[in-house]
Image 1 (tube, helix red, strand yellow):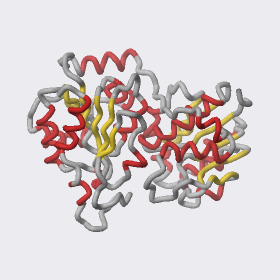
Image 2 (tube, one colour; image 1 turned 60 degrees about the horizontal axis):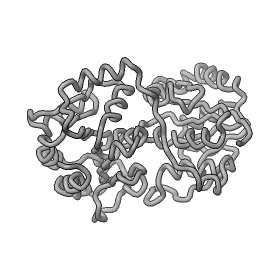
Image 3 (tube, rainbow, N blue to C red; image 1 turned 60 degrees about the vertical axis):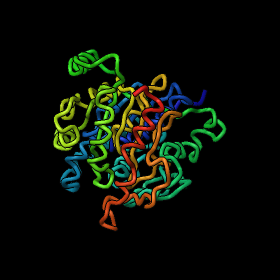
Image 4 (cartoon, rainbow, N blue to C red; image 1 turned 45 degrees about the horizontal axis):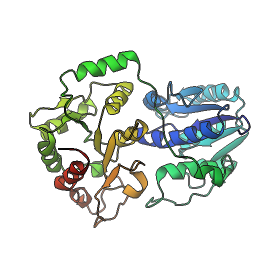
Length: 356
């Protein structure tokens, strides 16, 4: 057992990135079971880490308000920093590497501030230990979870030998009774003789979206053989309506909070989504090899972001003609990468695992 420490992890957003960074907390909890492990999260993503069994305390930073006018909110930000300083942290880990996370890292008062050396927006200026990443941007091969854990081995908090015996995982808050009851009610008419397939078709980047006609084909191939559950936010409803064309499905988009969404994923046998929060939250709820996660990759690399696990797959299964650019906008203006994956390819992979 290692010496007890007080450790603060700063990862403010986004959903998938927080899940990947939760492996840092899990690894620390594994090797430092009696240490204090705290987290700073943005107000928009707090549902992933509040009441998380890996963490002792969670501090919510009102980043969505602060970023409107950093100068105006300096007094409030300083008060937030002073609150953190009272905890006398031994280490602060900036797992984000941006200006906003660097501000909090600097104000934390931690004795040693740690982060990767390729942080952006001058975030590395506040670090005492700058860990050289095994792969710099754009990421192509080194998995994002292992990149996060490199912070621990590079800083000496966890040795390379110890890490060989660690199986990376993330943990999410346990669903409350109220949450379980609400999702049970929303899925009252579920056919318990069929598997539950969660389809989460939308994400923030346009060039992470699968062609609608391919979603339509996949939906039509599976709608009679599984319970199809569509998730997302309210603005995704037109897209989902376009896919289902009035067909039979459980459409929960816009009906669930973060904790309720997590409970939906816990009930899935299969999750299919582009490289987005659904795919990565799915990794954090895996238990007894369920759910399986099929992730559709276009502008980002499947080598880097496919959820870890024997039964999880990243598509396309073959090498794409246009390599992942990791850009929000297509330089070719063609979005051709979104056309490579075909519904038949995904359905064939489903058929290998499920009797559908």
